[in-house]
Amino acid sequence: MERSRIIRTGVAVLLVLGYIGYREYRERQAQPAAANEAPAATAADDAPPAEPVKFGSIAFEPCTLAPQFGPSSVEAQCGTLAVPENPAQPDGRKLELAIAWVQPGDEAEIEPDPVFMLAGGPGQSARRTFPQVSPAFAKVLEHRHVILVDQRGTGASNPLDCDFGDDEEAIATAAGMRVLTERCRDALAKKADLRFYTTTDAVRDLDAVRQALGVDQVNLLGISYGTRVAQQYAMRHPGHTRSLVLDSVVPNELILGNDFAANLERALDLQFAQCEQSQACTSKLGHPRAQLDALMATLRAQPPLVRYRDAATGESKAELLRPEAVAALMRMYAYMPMVSALLPLQLHEAAQGRYDGLMALTRMLGESIGDQMAMGMQLSVVCSEDAAGFRADPSAEGTLLGNQFAEFLGEQCEAWPRGDMPADFHQPLSGEVPVLVLEGEFDPVTPPRYGEQVVANLPNARLLVLKGQGHNVIGAGCMPKLFAQFIATTDAKGLDAKCLDDLAYVPPFTSFNGWEP
Image (cartoon, rainbow, N blue to C red):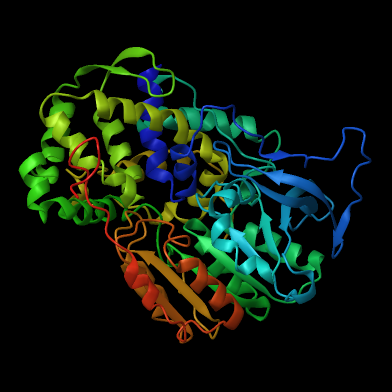
């Protein structure tokens, strides 16, 4: 059972673009998980319920937005909007889109164009992920509404969750995953037509929400996969798009997954270079890249049985340390350089035959990451929009990730219904829309060259590459201030971004007490 959980996590990590779910995992606390949406506290138990508040034609009631793990939460107003699942059948099955409205602080100076935050994944809930990035919205919320729509198939908008179970033999092979995917497909078919949970459907929903709110123009902040949704909205509704902020951008032309292996290798090389360039690090820890390669060779040949202490329960356990679990850990830690600074030390420990630290970390990851994504929705998106372009890359053989994405997801998509997409879906975004593109220098999934690719076709766009940062950078350093200034002015090129020079590289840990002073 433990092995199957780790294998399943390794497969899920191949798919995930979103980073916020991993941040939730890192912030996990000992207390029970909070509800995704809880009623707001009242002064007394017998106080009368608050009257619904209207924004446009949508009725909202007070709610609390909370992540799955951790204490951070946001007070908001929550409501729903019914939309047809199949746009060609307006009288057919309806979906209730779950919407949250975070109100501005100054009622006297509210601007008419709200900011929509679009979550990553594909498969994350906007309402659940917002608390993790809400500090970046503090200045924006002084004068603008923030709207969060759980994309159809995620969160509370008819979520398409797949439980692939604990059949380790099935999970470990592409053919076995196809069988499990067929089971999930058949189960979800009872409540959803899986052809209608694509990015194109989500864009249609977003515009329905805009119209119901009674606003003419919107600003869109997309994070990771959410940048695909933002670009597609701007292509279909340019007159209603005031501005775009694309954090860790996915170019329209990109086939999700084809570059995953190469992008991770690049990011690890850059992050490990922080140790290679430090005599204090190499003298104590050696060379992390070489140690990682040696470790993977060992694990592929004969995974060791490792005794370790479960970080969540304190219980002593023994399990095999498998290569797919270490690959998953390396990828997810690479998303956040503050965490990947631990990797050279852990790899050095493993090189000495002390695997317990790595084992505990992979176990923590395996317990947490799989719950952050609506995997059925992810399959509807990727199988409809990317599967036709999957390709095996011979140069990926021997890398941490190899070609497992194309192999596994190719089999899964053979069994999954596919929706339609516009003929120009994979054409680059162009036009006059103001765009601010953000990339982390060390991003392991959407590297800076993706940002360069996007801004090349946009005369009113600017790319900011944040030094030493990974994936999802809207909250780094002075970026929240620049974000607010751009939303206020829509002038990306006029931003004074010198404050980003103050961002510092995170030194690698050379001991369990931290880095060298």
